[in-house]
Image (cartoon, rainbow, N blue to C red; front, side, top):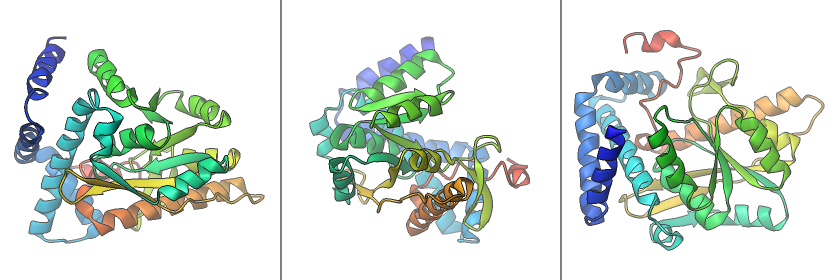
Length: 295
């Protein structure tokens, strides 16, 4: 409780300062974390070398430093979202490919959005719910109940409906059956029980098949969404072309092929600009546990 109160005091101070100062403070925290967190720097290096090969020390540092910076900018977004209005969000985002969503909604199609921890995912998810369409999203509850309620308040203020990870599929199923949109971040490692095997950067990995499974069962479109920026003030949220899940007599194959297609898409997005991805996560832990043995 004491730590949470200190955080609220810091928030009170920061939110009364100009945004450029808040932003500079969080960027400073990201730079400091990069220098004083060798454990996760090793994870970043292991992931980069495992997927992109020998990119050189300068590129590795660029990717690693921005990973921390992006994480801190997403944390700042959580703080600001508690006070942001829809008009505030609209000042910072533009949409590309919005017609894919508008056409689906106009025709009455159900939508399963998928994305990755890429760019400012907190802004992307909030803007989706606030400016495009409300959506149900799964999340993992924090161990500290005070911070957990804080996070839920930030994320659910403007249209996101948060569903705790345990039992999420049941609630997601209820939502999509009622014609409501649902969304998943699917770029993190899963256990063998929770995910299926895919190829990711030419390596075996585990990925959630829930988006493909639910889209197939309830005849929904899968619409990928990603966010990036050139100046960290103005963000572009891009909707990729929708994916239709096949309905053959082999449901398992249909789900696996779509899940693999989504993995391939995320890989293409990351390769286009690697620095925006969340490299400090042990993405390949389930299939390649020895990769992180020294971490």
